[in-house]
Image (tube, rainbow, N blue to C red; front, side, top):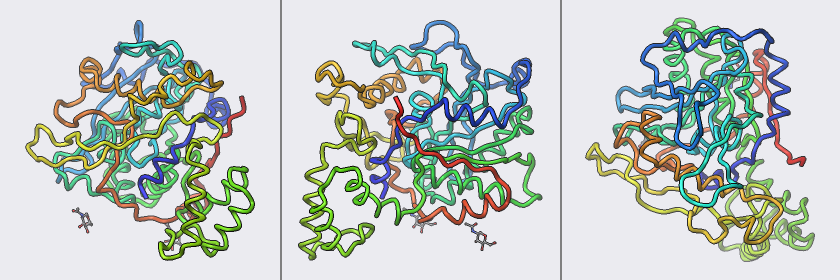
Length: 419
Ligand SMILES: *[C@@H]1O[C@H](CO)[C@@H](O)[C@H](O)[C@H]1NC(C)=O
Ligand SMILES: *[C@@H]1O[C@H](CO)[C@@H](O)[C@H](O)[C@H]1NC(C)=O
């Protein structure tokens, strides 16, 4: 199931459309002094390797412990709104996967930095300022979650054994502790957001906050709503809808679609019965004719699949000996690297930027600036296979129903490339 979601990582968002949305819910006013000036002992980063000069926005990183028993700590990147941090919304952003780093959201989706992929030749990648960032009008906490994702880690392996609902609880704990440490953001309208697999994580997290009792430890969170993009929502519809989608997009013929429908009894949700030769051969034929199609965006070139490689000790330094059983990596040596130049393709390979993120996040200077605890994780992975994670909610439709009935604002959007 996990791999299914990896292959369905959502494409880039359309920042302009979302900025328009955010503009509706915020009040324009003149800039106040940086709210973070209030916080002592915070890891505020003014310069970062790869970016020339001081960062033109307020960046802070840190850990928050969400499971004291096992020492599970979630890592965050916090970027203040460039407009009015004291009043603009506070967004907790969780990238999908499950297991894809918040850095992916920051550098490839809604954040204010991007790699100069087009200008890259070799060596250390260059970062450039990205104008259409959500942080123009909102304070965003990019959270490496669930535990085991990105720079988040657990002292004990048992801390990685969390379910979707338990992770929602941990994100709630994270927010309470984070806001307690940043009381200047306690009254800002709070939104939970994310894309792809976070279509599950976001409503589950919002529900945990919405249904918490008043006698929980302060501070009380000012949850106003949530937003999910290209959202995984319901296992049966999402999985079962792939074959009809491929047919609707003209990727498979009418004949093949009919053969698969009849052979498999019309249900593409359940794994094909291996003894059913008609279904198995139709599905094999579908796989063969679509293997070169980019599974995350059928109109983009497929520059190489993410490959899995073993190794990468997560507990080095703790003597635990436990390993991440599988890592999902973007294969750096794939011949499709810079396929734009090689093949003259009109659209850049999204994966090229992903590959640069590995160079950046594993650099010792970058890690020191971010305050990464030495030995907490091995090499960084954009998307980590969370082998202990349990997907215990098969549909979030009841969550949407209850949250919207309770008056929370919801935005469910789908990215469509318009350029
Ligand atoms: C993970 O936690 C669940 C629920 O507490 C438990 O049933 C399961 O045995 C645990 N798995 C591992 C590998 O410890
Ligand atoms: C939604 O609300 C109904 C009615 O109160 C409740 O029975 C159900 O458990 C709730 N579902 C979720 C996912 O919270």
